[in-house]
Image (cartoon, rainbow, N blue to C red):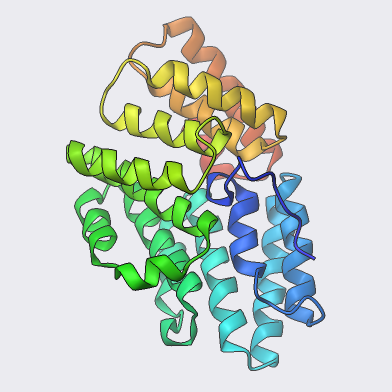
Length: 265
């Protein structure tokens, strides 16, 4: 079985979510399902190299099984991991080979969210917004709540980046309806939105999200928040130095050199 996370940490907020997207719906008794579940546990423990290797094996297994549905979901998971590890070209190439016609509506929303996240990560905000507005409502409604929350949350960040304030509010409300407003996912999303809007409360929101990430044992998310905090204008030079060191150390131990390098810059 795929390891579950508490509801307030909607899976899109952390690496555990990425793997759940890849593994959910893949028969646990199949080789690809078993390997996806193992990768989930590896990512939960911050073991990226091991987890990604297991995902690669899961992909090969899905192709051996001739299961295009499982293959598509695993590719989406792999692409999201590559986005998180700042390997954008490979993330894009993985998404480009997903046969979307073989996906169910839930997986199609996960695919859309992965595309939006990749565009946001590369500061292609208008492309991300176009993707957010292009997805059909009937497809969104058929996705589960955690997937919908993930999509709405990522889109809210994209919309904040192009100053579409009214739309940001609408998308955040949609995310709130599908998650816990006092939970880590929602607070983290609020922090990202405030950050992209240049609002002063971004720091306090990041701090609150960081606390929940540590409590929930989410090493990737904790380190990412440290990086974002180090980039805020309100952060003092002394605090910025400390945040970067902590961020760099954490990512190095997770085997994520691109992220560690970014922290050191």
